[in-house]
Structures are given as structure tokens and as C-alpha cells.
Image 1 (cartoon, one colour):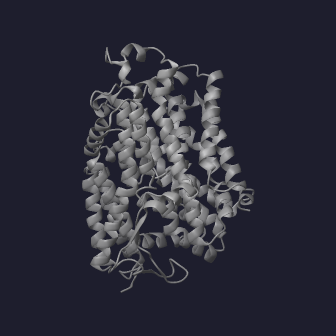
Image 2 (cartoon, helix red, strand yellow):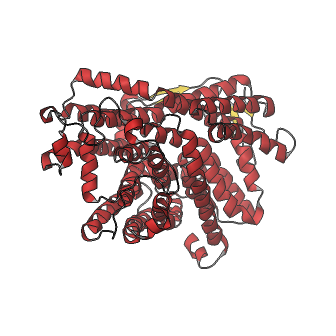
Image 3 (cartoon, rainbow, N blue to C red):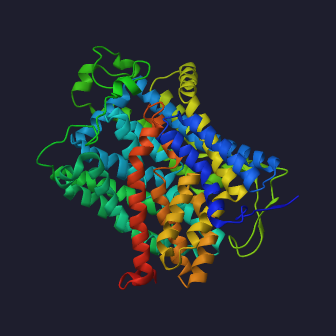
Length: 576
């Protein structure tokens, strides 16, 4: 039996909006104020969402349970599957000491922590966002930063801040492709419009990142390098998005940015080398060795003798610049990872793998039995509910294949890999539970219409809608953890509202995606990925408190740009 969503169940827009906001408020208070463990706060939010969906919005209990269950399954695969396998690879390289060699090779490019952060979190992370998305860049860069000596809060928070400007074109343009599909707007027009918004922030974000880490003076001291990294990312981002399409925007822009920054650092260095890995203005006592050092991993050069013939490294070798062979061996697992992630992101490869393995499970009682109704959509539409078990084509499977191949090449035996994998599962068990519950919460809000009620509240802002419509995209990503999901959720609403207000629908649909990228740093999924990757158990609350200001401030700046594009010359020229 089809159930129609109700967007004002309490007969008052204010009361209905407050009820819709309750699950998110409960979860955020639990994380940020009550210092609950992440899985506990997530469960509390989910319970609140079930109560609101059933008792306030009138959603049948069976449908609410099915929606939450499907979300939990999606949380485990593909999201949790990515986290589990990237942590597995990271632990393999840590346990035999090669990660320490990689750390020193990065330090060989520059000893300055600000420049290391710029290279790894912004430029290198953007590549993984473009190739895979879904938490991969935060997991990879967070792990590398913690290994370089950054404190858990610094590694987590800064990796999240850096992973913003590339998000709209993540996973080979998936968010833009989805936006075009749900709105019916031209793909190239949407790609180009986003590409005339985000390049401004591709220049701003690197400056913001270093300011958040090192303070204003620390940022100013390396402004030439920051400008190089930002501009060499922004220009390809604009050109490719406007003249080629959304598929390779981040991949190409990230490569150009990385190469340009490395070449620039060969001829330029700051007057003073910044060696601190702590955030300015934060008193952090958690040490990397205490938090992230598993099973004898080499975090520094504390060990005197380790057999180099088995693939591990001696302190003497670590203390000096690694030779070429050792350096190649240290980077090889990550090079394999890059190749596999890129291959798994190619639509043709993904389609071929899907043909070998994909299984689809329509959820009876939920599939096509939830109806979205006006004004959220132009006409009544049924919501599909099909769980796709694409275990072979999932990005996490590519990461696992890379980890196994890399592990064998590093000298691990098959039994060693199995044991290491078991230890990794045990280490991330609570994080996997948290991710599953968070996705259950997000999926339930979607099928119950709770998220649409929040969206409609933003739509009643009149001439200020360009600002608040942008913040709607931010809210969508904060709730769902995905720019793609936010675009699917609110893309149609953005188009409809823009048309009613006489605004350009392409502008507002693009604003949903551009504003959404700033919500990426505060969504629960990303925060859990960051805390897991850096080995910081129960660190989700401090991370959320640290990044929240940066998230909302950058989202407002995107909204201001969209306001200018809507109303103020010459910014209006960017709309056409």
C-alpha cells in the first residue's frame, strides 16, 4: 500500500519543522555537548527519528523499519567497506615500517608541516575524492597525516576541511550526473555552473586550511605556495568542468596541483620551517604514538634493529634519506591503491564488474510504496527502495585488492594478511556500527519526508533564497553524508522553487551541490571515517566541535557568491 509523505503533519509549519529537526538535534547534542560515544549518539538520533517518523509524520512502522534497515546496509557497503579496507592497507604499511619511509619521503619534499598539509590534505586528497569519493580521501590523508606526527584532532579536522572544494565532482562526477538526472537539467550546463562557483573556493580553501592549522601569520608566511596549489587546481577545475564535463575535473586538477606544488617547492622555501604538528590555539595532549601505534608499527625511529630483508626498515635507514629501492617499496602500495581506485571509478570497468556480481534486492513493503508529493516535486512520484549489493564493483573491493597485492609485495604471507585483517575488523568495529546507524538515520529521514519538511522551511525565504537554497544543499550533505544524496534529495525542490521565484533553475541546482560540499566536513559519516583513520576512538565530538564553524562559515560564503550571481552585475555574467 502506497503511503503519501506529509510535510506539515502538525498543522503548523513551525512545529512541523521543529519536529523534523529533533533527530539531528538529539544526535548533535549527544556528540557535541554530552560527549557521548559516536555510536551511542547515533542510536539516540535514530530512535528519535523513528519516533518522529511514526508518531508525528504518520509513517507506518514497517516502512520506517525497512528504511532504517536499508540505510544501515548501505552504511556497511559501500561506506564501511571503504573504511575497513583503507585502514587494513594503512596498518600493513605501518606494521612493517614502510609507512615511516613514506613519511620521510614526504618530509624530503619539505620539512615544513604547513606545506606537507597543503600537499597531502588538499592536493593529494582531491585526487582520491575525484577518483573514488565516499570517504576515501579523508581516510587516506588522515592516516598519512597521523603518521607524519599530526595530532589526532589536527589530522582529522584538517583532512575534513581540505576535502571540500573537490566534493561536487567526486567519484568521477557522480554528484553532478545525479543532479542532472533528478532535475532534467542539462548535464553540461550544471557542470559549467558549478565550475563557475567552486574555483573561487578552490583558491580560498587552501588558505583557510593553513590558517586553521597555523594561524594568520603562519598562513601569510607561505602564501606563495598556497596560491600555487589553489590556482593550479582552480584553473583546470574551471576549464574541464565548462568545456569537457564533470567526469575528470578533480582527477586532472589534483594532478596539476600536486605536480605544480612539488616543482614550486624545488625553487622556493619559507624563511622559517614550521615543525609543529599541533593546531594553533588548541592544547592537545594526545600523541600519535599513544593513539595510533598498532602492533609495533614504526611511528618514528625508535627501534634499533629491524630486518630489512623481510621488508622492514632499520632505524639507521630511517634516520637517513631512504635509497631509491626502499623509497619505491614504500610508495608501491599507495601507487597500487591509486591505480585500483581509479580503475574502479571508470564507468566501463564498474559496469563490467557489476555484470559479474551485482545483486539487487527490492524491499517489499517499501519499494515504490512511498510517494513524494507537491510541492517537493512537480508531480507525485514513487520512491524506489532497492538495495544494490555490488560487492565486486564497490570502491572498497578495489581497495581490498590493492591492499592484498601490496601486502604480498611487502613480504606478508597469506596467513599474515588474514590475521592482520582480523585485527583491523576488531579495531574498527564500533566505527562500522556508527556508520551503519548514521546511514539508517539519514535514509529514514529521506523516506519519511522529514528532510523535505526541513527543505521547505528554507524555501520560504523569498528574495534571500539564493543564500538559503545554498544552505539547503549544505544541510542535505550534513544529513546524508553525500553530495550525490543531497542533490537527489533537494535537486527537484531547488529547480521548482527557483522557477517560482523567477531565478535561474540551473543556478540554484548548482548551488545545492556547491553549498553541499561545505557540509561534507560535518556529516557524521565523514567524522567517523576521520576518527577511525586517525586511530582516535571516541574523538567524534571534539572533531565536530572543531570543524563546525569552518563548515558553516564557508557555506555562507558560497551562499553570498550565489546571491551575487543571482542579482549583482558583473557576477550575473557567470550565470550565462
